[in-house]
Figure 1 (spheres, helix red, strand yellow):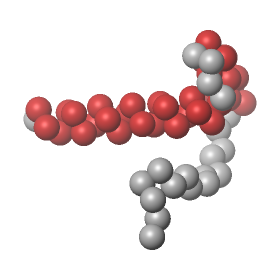
Figure 2 (cartoon, helix red, strand yellow):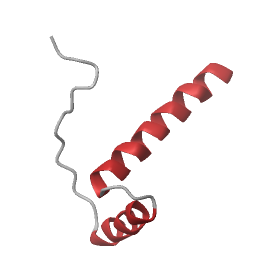
Figure 3 (cartoon, helix red, strand yellow):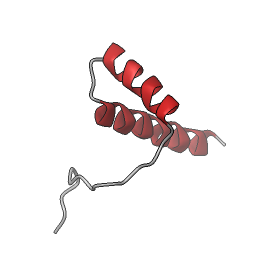
Figure 4 (tube, helix red, strand yellow):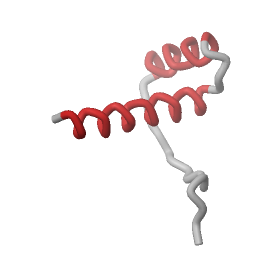
Amino acid sequence: MAGKNEKKQLLLRISSSLWRELAAWAEDDFRSINGQIEYLLTECVRQRKKGKRSG
């Protein structure tokens, strides 16, 4: 049975300009680019869930 913290792999194609922006942001936050993308997606999902409760 899969655990809650199991990681899935995902192929993501993004523009080189977005990659550079994410890389700079990740460096500012002391994260890897992968970690930064995961953090941002997690925050978006959290905010979406929060918005559904109040609406």
